[in-house]
Image (cartoon, rainbow, N blue to C red; front, side, top):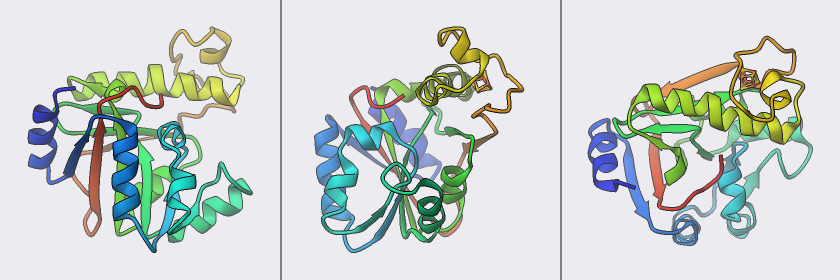
Length: 198
Ligand code: SF4
């Protein structure tokens, strides 16, 4: 991971960044800096691999639709003061890409919480926005579709690639490219020098 390039380009875009060698160090940082908040999580394998739900629940109210009635929890998480998610792709040039099927994660990343925190493993980083978009669709979305076992051609092909399907079970319904922090939201990117999530 070339953190100096990431720091230069993302901070030039007014994002706050931090580097962690391991997911444990990143989790320790979050335990120290997120306290007494209502924390919402996106569907994030990175958060799961970091054990964040359990660790942050000790000092916060954590709302995660993977840990409770899904739709009800998604609605409650709209009132989160801090929102934690990962990125499906990040470009070294300073942009983030995320794709959603339901939209709760994208919505919270754009408006509502005072602070959003992205967990970005080294496997998410691509040289430019075109490659980050390609990764988001052909790697992250395909693996997520496999996780949900959707009836979509990407799953039927054994995870070969995205076929830009029109299936009713398509999980790629909206794509957000975050070029700068949204107004009024502190947006912090934790670059973690390990493979993390999809
Ligand atoms: S658009 Fe369809 S084929 Fe492509 S990754 Fe999404 S669900 Fe799979």
